[in-house]
Image (cartoon, rainbow over all chains, first blue to last red):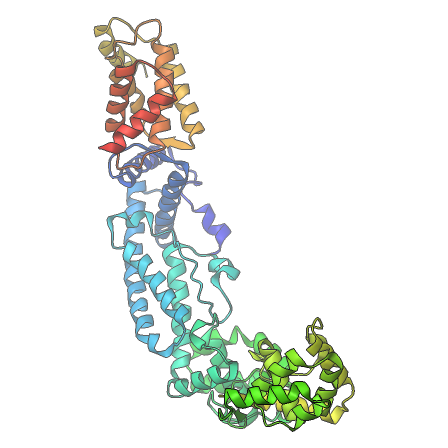
Amino acid sequence: MNQIKSSHLLISKAKLNHKQKIQYHNMIKKLILQFNHENSSSLSKRNYQRIICSIDYICLQSFLLHHNYQDSIQNIFNEGLSVLEIKKDEALTKYQKLVQDSYLYRLSQYNEILQQLHEYLYALNTPFRIFRYAFVHHDLDYPLLDGLPLYHDMYHKKGLDLVNEYMDRLILENQFIHYFEHELDDFYDHFEHFMQCSYSDLQINLCETVLIQFAGNYFINQKLSILFEDEIDSSLLNHLDYVKKTDEFYQTMQQIFPLDIVHYLSKNKNQLILKFTQMKNNPNAFLIHSQRSKVNVILQDDHTFSSFEKFLDEFSHSDCRVQLLLQSSLNIYEISEIFQNDLTYEEKINYLQDIPLSQLALLIQLNYPELFIFHQQFSLNIHEFDHNDEFSAALQITLEAKNKYQIKQLEYLLNHLEIKK
Amino acid sequence: MNSIITQINQQLTIHGYQISKEDFNKLKQELHHAVLHFNWVESDLSILNKIITKFSESSYLNQNNYLFLLQGIIFCYYGIRSHLSSSYSDEIILTELFNQFNSHGELNTELAYTTIQSLKRR
């Protein structure tokens, strides 16, 4: 029943007969006293509204089930309470399921949502529950497959009904994730390595990530898995008809998963097509894969401070400082320090133009660390750089002097080199 | 309503005055005005009965000033009520307001303030 229809059934807006009107007002009086622990017959407007909404919500439960509008208000109210008691028991069972599934998640937000649900459900066991059924004070801010409940007008539901709806959806997501349970640990490791950040702090929906990985694997490798062991050959995705392929994917899913799960996941079908169309040319930027091919540049810490000092001394008295720096065996941090502090602008340009591409890639990584978080498939675009410093200006001149092939090579290096101490 | 006024007047006669229907209506209006002012809702109008009979015992009230003083007391009562949680009962607030009014005999914001302070010190 949608919002408009159910609003007709709100007792505060219903056409009550004379007897019912008196009963309704007596009920308000009684509940105000209960709300005030029998201490006062008055209360703030806000709390008054809360009581009116609570009565509406409780009576609505009875109206929707029994369609009996002529009964006494007390009876309608009591029937509503019985319905809510049953819904509460169902909610507790669902909550237990979600708690049991928490091992699937490495997201701290999942634990927070469990805490929010626990607080709400706990309040339904107190004498004050009449005033809690209709109100969820938390935002339920772990996003589901189709986003936050807030973006969907809380599914046009409130209170216990909203909590039950949210948990139903989350349970379906967990049932889907269960199928990849044995791969999850590896997936998390790949993810953290790929994104260079801790998975637990992210505000993302696990089910969506798993679904995309699963679909990607199905499209590319025809494998029922969420793991990519190596980089993805983008040419495999280039010629796919995503609409057709996605239909085929959901049909295959019907053979593997229960219908209710497939039905739930198919709500995301269009987004899935869109996502894969976007990643067509660059799947490695979206799909999480293990990065065995990434080359670690290990910095050997065999340079003593005195040898660095000695070099600096020699460097400051030299006439060909760029040449000296190019021939040095300094590590990238030391080079970066001298580059920033001791070279003139012209020397910087000369140095950048003469160093090997691998060295240039490392210097770019050091100077723009922020570009390499979440941008594993880094595309070299000089306009993305901040041009306020000498490094950026010198880099722009250097890159403009490179040919297409060199730029491609540099991009490859930027995506595959990693500095390790 | 007449029976309520008769009931109140039986109490007031002991103190030598009576409340007219017109004055009772004015006090009711004052109650509505006060709850509106403090964003408040009163569900039981018998509180008016309680206020009138309680304060009729004060020696500061007489036939000439009772309407003016009771209007002020009603406003003051809801000012206090809206500043305190429901752990303070209506009766406790009325009793304390009565005591404070009786000891100073003045109706002003200071009365509301001292009543709240005294209740919070308990």
